[in-house]
Length: 422
Image (cartoon, rainbow, N blue to C red; front, side):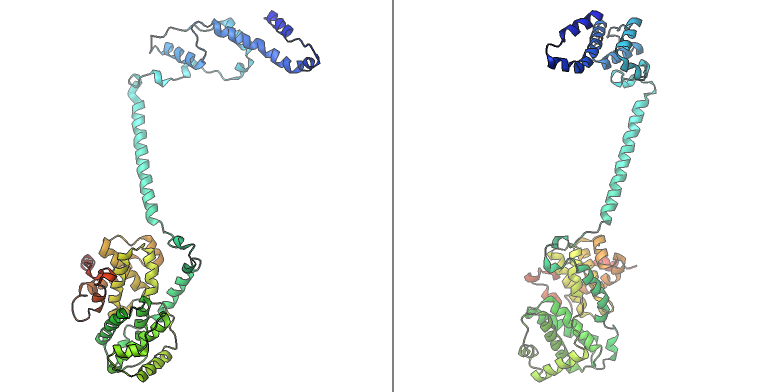
């Protein structure tokens, strides 16, 4: 080994100044080269050895356990070789010693030879636990999905007319002000010459007039609101009740429409029962009685918002408006607020088209009404739906029994809601 070091030094003797400068850098390499040669000699002395130490351990393990007799035994290192390897590789002395018995190579051992077959049992238990965990994760994900409240305004983020930044505040204000648009459900008691039936006839007729004039939906809802608020404060004779309805529609049209019906059109609709002077006098009386308060939220305001929360299509929208217009005719529905009535109409329409279980968390969040709260009102709406085509007051049915409105009146009512009475 000394001779090899001298020969190596002679080979790297510097011949110029640059080589002399590199001697310091090459000195470190010269010290390591004998160690590499010693390792190569050591590997050559091992009979049948493989250059990969992992394979050596694997064969030694098979020799020790006696599981495989096909591989020939590998001689172990003698004392001189072990001493030589420790001398030439000082790094090996720093590593923790591990006996061969501590290694376990499972690929060489059949599972059938393992005592007690504990491995297979542990694998089965692990697969069972993983399956149960996956099932629990699926259940939790379903619960999370059911509880998710959708952002119904995200699609209108770039639409300035949707006022996404203020829409929540607007509807919070509508909810606060809707009590001002409500009237007492017992106001008809103070009327001496008219009753609930006459009111129903008037509104049923106004729905037909509204449809013939092709007015906006907002106009109809505001018309009914003006009639009830005026009758709650002013006593009216029977012969003037139709005039009240015509003037209420005139005022609502001036507030909502672009093209307003003229007074002569209203007189013609009433078969000239009233003069122009009478129409203008009633208009003056109604405005002063209501103190010119026209901007109040009606059920239509909440219908648009709640239908958006319900992710409605055209069919659900038409059926919802059909049901709520049936409610406009009924005097007893005045006990419900506009927002509650709108939510109940949409819920009933959902049950009519798709069955129960359609009132999602998003609808409950935006309406502030749960399914249980809407059931009683929904049963009343189903009753109106069942008798819509019968009797004398069929204006709403005939309006929605047209192709323009999708024949929404032909939908079968949700009879199961009326039958599930506790």
